[in-house]
Image (cartoon, rainbow, N blue to C red):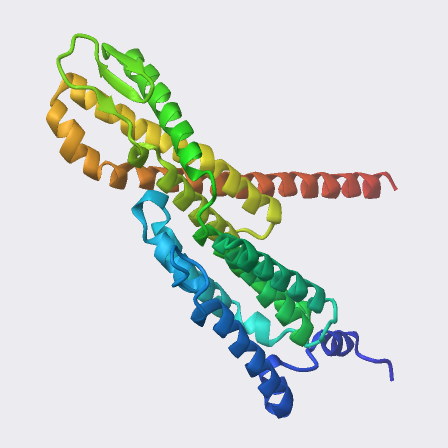
Length: 331
């Protein structure tokens, strides 16, 4: 009797173990893993090494610095919850993956430990925070294998959105100038009689005080937040890495454009209506209007790359079928 190919295929695809079953069957191994996890918690969450007076652990440093207004990283406090959500969302794939311990995970784990040692020697909390994905991923590969660990790659990578970048102030200054120039040119095109200098825009006749595009109006906060949302949106909705990359890249100009349009409307409102209302009340809530526009633009980009890809695939399929029919007709 010939073997059933479907049965054989199912057998090949079926996982040999699941991680929870492995833990239940290997009590000693589970205790060993628990001790490693406890060591990780101790060095990253309990022992104080960083901060101005070395009073903060790595996790405490991340949480504290994300709460500082000057870093514009308030979204960083949501990152751990997003990571847990994405891992929970992939739980079925994780539990159905094949368990196959791989030794090269030790190399990745060792690299993370090396980063941590460097961070302690140099008192650089960013390096310690950046070592966390390496530690966890290497640990998962070594214990359960890459088939399970691959589901953690993207969620762990999101942790870098919670680590403030060095040189962010310089980037903020550049964004302030860009927003000023774009707002100035659009405003003059629309008939506003204004002049710009540095990061300030003012009325040419002095009828209202100069509007200074401060650091808070640079758009860096909305830019980082939009890139963060774009990465999550792309990961959930797209099935190609290049599509995820397109969404993340296009989110940058979208965020800059949305913030520049916001500044433009403030200038136009000050010029043609009420400068005090524009500089205070409207300035404070206008971000809630233009950030959703950036999200809308992001969704449109996602729609176009999906529809364009489907259209191309349909065209190729149609051409193949047409050629096959022509060949059959000739024969």
